[in-house]
Length: 136
Image 1 (tube, one colour):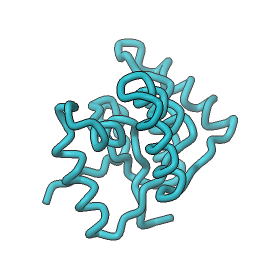
Image 2 (cartoon, rainbow, N blue to C red):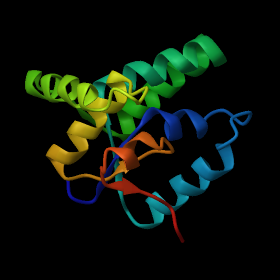
Image 3 (tube, rainbow, N blue to C red):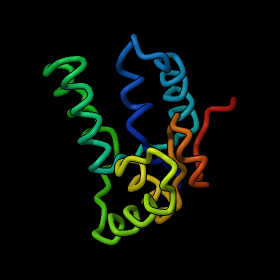
Image 4 (cartoon, one colour):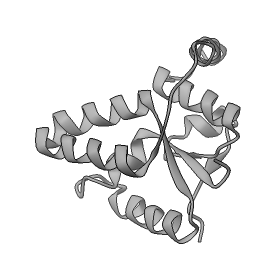
């Protein structure tokens, strides 16, 4: 899975909601990912977080359609128990940051799988995790 990015929830949600401040950026990012033939990998925690955000902000039909699209187009990645342990340790290393478990496990997975994370969240820069950015 070398030609892939690991998606954070932010860009996945932003690409769906025109009211999101990063909607245009997320759509441009998706075009660039497609043009570079980069696939998108999604962890189960990000799938759950994204589905919940869409369900409560945009409704049941949009959430179900998004879930179907993600399942058919993205590579789904499960976490190991060790990923959760490492993520919990990572959070404790940054007590001055409001680092969510979702972000911590995504950072750990990105590092373990050697995949850059597609995110708009500054915490990944603080954690010194490889981040994919559309800088074209």
